[in-house]
Amino acid sequence: MRKSSSTLLAAILSGGILLSAACAQTPPLINMPTGAAYVAEERTAAQTTVLLNNEQSIIPLRDLDQMKAASVRFNHTNAPVFDSLLNKYTQVSSFNGLTYNGFTGASKLADDLKLYNTVILQLTDADLINPQVIDFIGVNARLKKLVIAYWGNGSTLGRLNEIAVPIVWCQQVSPVSASYVAQAVFGGVAVTQKLAKTFSPRYAAGTGFLTAKTRLQYTVPEGAGMSAANLLAIDNIAREAIGDRATPGFVVLAAKDGKVIFNKAYGYHTYENTQPDKITDIFDLASCTKISATTIEVMQLVEQGKLGLDSTMGSYVASARNTNKNKVLVRDLMLHQAGLTPYIPFYERLRPSDHSSDSSAAYPTKVADGYYLRKDYYKDVMLPQMLNTALRTKGQYVYSDLSMYFMKEIVETITATPLNVYVQDKFYNPLGMQTAGFLPRNRFSRDRIPPTENDTYFRHTLVQGYVHDQGAAMAGGVSGHAGMFATANDLAILYQMLLNGGTYGGIQYLKPETVQQFTSKQSAVSRRGLGFDRWDPVVSKHYPSNLASPQTYGHTGYTGTCIWVDPQTNLIYIFLSNRVYPKDSTLLNSRRIRGRIQDVFYEAIQKGL
Image (cartoon, rainbow, N blue to C red; front, top):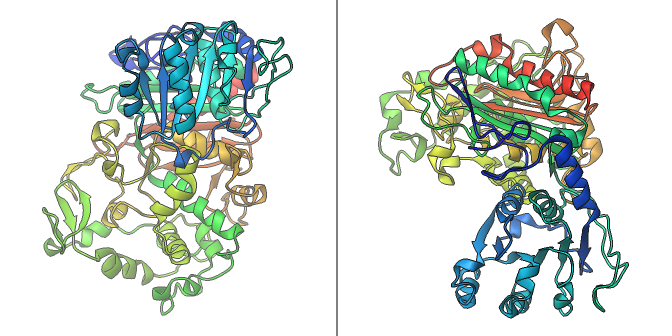
C-alpha cells in the first residue's frame, strides 16, 4: 500500500471499499512528515543543497530518451525515497552496493552496470571514508556519465577533491532531503545555493552552480498553497463512485504551479476486489488519444510548415480525391465541423472469413487475444467506408471520431512515419514518459493495465491491454482517435509541457503561440479549440466542472478518463478509470464524478492554507 500525503495511511477501509492512496512524492513504507512540517523540511533542504562541478551543465539531466540510468547506494538509508523520485522522471534501476559482499565485490557491481550509460551514486559521510568507494567513483567517472548525490555535514567533501563529476550535496539528511536531491538531479526543483565555507581547494566558499526548475516537482498540497485537509472530500466521492459501481477504481492526479500535489489510486481493477488500483497503473485513454497523440503531432507539423490548417484532405490523402472528402479542410476536421458521420460500428459488418483465432500471414492484425483480422482490412474496407459517407452537417459542430481517423492518414502521409512511432520518438521518450504510447501489451504485463469491457458482442473476451474502442482495435490498436495508454504521471508531464507554453526539461517541443492557437476557442459554432475540447460557456452544463475557468482545455475519454488544463489557476487535473468494466455504465457521468472531484481542487485553491 502507499501512504497519503495528508493522512499517511497505508489504506482506508470504509464500507468495503479500499482507498489505496499515494502521496505525490512518498514511496511505500516511508514515514514522511506532512503538511507544513513537510514544507518546512523541504525549505531547509533547498537552503542546504549545493551543486558542484557542473561546468558542462550536466545537471539537470537531459536527453532522457538516450539515457539508461542506474542508481547505486551504499549506506544511504533514505535510498527508497531517492529512487522512487528518480523514477518519476525516467526509468532508473536500483542497486545496493552493500549486497556485493560488503562492497568487496566491486568488480561484480561494475559488471552489472555495464549496460547503463548514466550512474547516479548516492553517498554519505560513511561511504566517503571507504577507499573502495573512492576507487569505484574514479573508475566509473571515466566510463559513465556519473552523478554524485551526497548527504552529510561536508567533513568528507574534500575526499572528492580530484573528482570532476557533478555533485549535488545536501547537508540535511532526511527522507525529505532525499526527495529534494532526486528532484534537483532532474530539474524538478532549482538549486539556488553556493558553498558558504571552504572545504578544500576545489570546494571553496562561493563555489557552486545554480539551476532552474525545468520539470515537475513532487510535493504536498501545502507546497502549492493548499491544505491537504481540504482534499479529503475526494475520498468521500471515491466511496460513492465505487460503492455505487460507477467504476471499479480510478486514479486522480493534480498538479498546481508545476508541482504534483495529489496522486491517489482508489478501488480495484475489477469488482472482484482482487487487485488494488495503483498510481502506476496504465489506463486506456480512449478519446484523450485525440489530444495526447494526434493533435500534438498536428501542432508540431503546422508550426514546421509541413501541414496547413486550411489545406484540404485531398492534398494529402490520395484515396480522398475522388470522394466528397476531397475538399474537406484540415481545420474543419480538427474542429469537428466537417460534416462527418459521428460514428460507424465497423465490427457489425465483419464476416466470419474476415477474422481468425490464429495469427498468420493472411490474418496478421491482432484485435485481442485469440482474435486476428485479415490483412489490409482497414485499408480495403474501413477507410473506403469512411470516405464514402455523406457530409450532411458541414459547418455545424458534430463530434465525430472519423475526423481523427482522417488526421492520422494525413500526418502519416506527411511524415512517412506511423502515428505511434512519431509521437513516441518526438514527444513521449524525450519527455521521460515511461508508459505512454500505443499497444501496451507489447511492452508491459497485463496486470499493470486495468481491464475495460467484458466484450460479449464482438471480441467475446475480456479486453485488457487492447484498446476498448472497436474501430481502433480493428485498425490494429493504433488510431488517431483512440488507442493510447498511459499512467497519470506520464500525462502530467505531457500537459505540463503544454501549460509551460511548449517547453519541458529545457527542450522546446512546441512554440507558445502554437499552444495558444490550438487550445483557445477557434470555432464560431462551438466551444472547441483545434483538437482540444474546452470549457462550455453554457453555465448550466457545468462542463467540465462548476468552477473551471473559461481558459480550461482538455478532453474526456469514453472509458472514463479526462485531462483538463486550466492556465488561469495553473492547474492540471487528470482522472483515469475503467468505468466500462464489466460493461458500459452511465453512472460516472450521471453522478458527475469527474467534475465534482475537479471542483474539490478549485475549492482547495480558493480556501488556501
